[in-house]
Image (tube, rainbow, N blue to C red):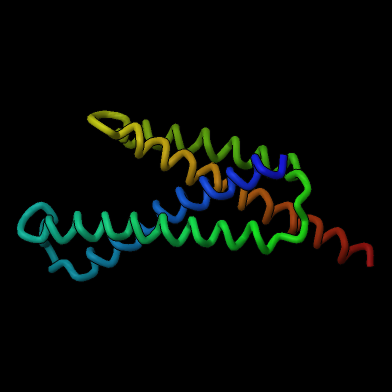
Length: 144
């Protein structure tokens, strides 16, 4: 089970960091865009280049970070069922949002749907673990 969880951490962290890298570079390029400027005019090449760089840098950071996270873990036990529920809900939500936003139409968009689904699954698992930690902390404070 430990190896499956490690593989899921690597895949999920890489996908989440890739999506966050693309969003960060898109926001950064958007900040430098002139007001009223359209991204498909002269600056389109810079915009796409920035998105590609953001995806690659985000994927690299996520991969290296996930390897560091796995090595630094003290508790290698199975994940709590709440984390698995958060991952499943995140995968469903990411896939639904991808289809809702029209990412499934066209060539090679299936990769984007998979990337967004894995990223949202990871975010769902992280959120579920945070909620569980806060809940346990509140119970411990009340007890003592």
